[in-house]
Structure formats: structure tokens, C-alpha cells
Length: 190
Image 1 (cartoon, rainbow, N blue to C red):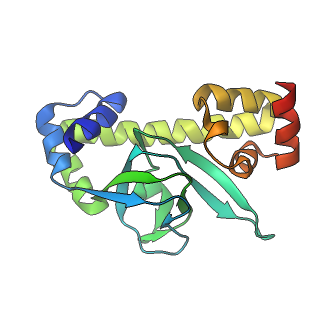
Image 2 (cartoon, rainbow, N blue to C red; image 1 turned 135 degrees about the vertical axis):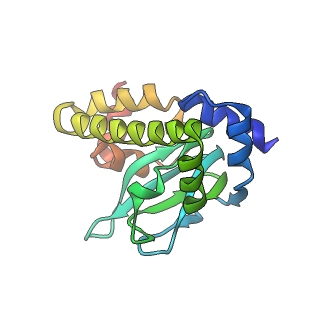
């Protein structure tokens, strides 16, 4: 069953043969996290790639004032930011937390890199994931810099339908760069 789920996630990014998927599946380990449980924390040794099979999690950092600031959301059938973008010298630069019960597939990043070297299809997939990650970050920067809060909320709703009904609003507000009070006001206006 895990093979079909992984195949669906991979093929949503880059068309990949069943043979290549089977190579990825041999490295895959399914892990379940309860709501509120941390997948990784800043400074923690972490050298995995993650596919979210089911549930919602987010990456975040804590401000000097102790507030959590959401960087990204990861929904069912998605890929958490690649290891190379969220780790430095094998240690996590960000926190990743389950906002609902979450089931992920963890893959050793070193072993996955070897697959990328040996298999052109897997390399194409990995490179597509990195390109998509960069595009997401740039789009978020543009929206934070040039869109009004209401427009950022509308973009969030388009990208993550029904998210507001599934997770704490504080995570959404911090992602949008606004307070929870401002989010509440925007929600009543929209």
C-alpha cells in the first residue's frame, strides 16, 4: 500500500516509472506522529527526506519573543522541504511539528542521494522537488512583501482549501505575517 501512496506523491512532482518508485520504496520507513509531536527540532541531528502520507504538519522557527512563526505547511500527499534546504552539517535549522496526527515516510537522505546519482528518473524527481521548494519560497516572499493581508489569506485558502478548519489559527496567522486578532477580523470580513 505504501508503494501506491509514494508513487502518487512522486508522480505529482515528476512522472517516474514503477521501477524507480520501487527503488525509493526500499528505503522508505513509515512513521506516525501524534498531534503536537515534533518531527525535528532546531539543532537536532536529522538526515531524512519526508513524504507526508496523511495529516498536516508545519515548519516553523521561534522568534526572540518566543512566538512560533510558521514557514511552510505540509499537507497529505506532499513532500516536506528537502534535507539540503532545512539542514546544515546534518543538524536541523527549523522545527517541524505535527498539527494533526501525521503519517510520514522517512527516507535516509544519503541513500536517496545515491539513488539520484544512479537513476536519472529519481534525479529528475529530486531536482523538481528542489525547484518547487525554491519557487514556493519566492512566491511567499513576494506575497508577504507586496500583498495586503486579505489577499494573502485568499491565496492561502486557494492553496490549502479548508486548512482554517483543521489547524490552530495561530499557525495560519504567523504564516500570513499577521496577528491572530487580525486573522479573526479578516475571516469575518471574507
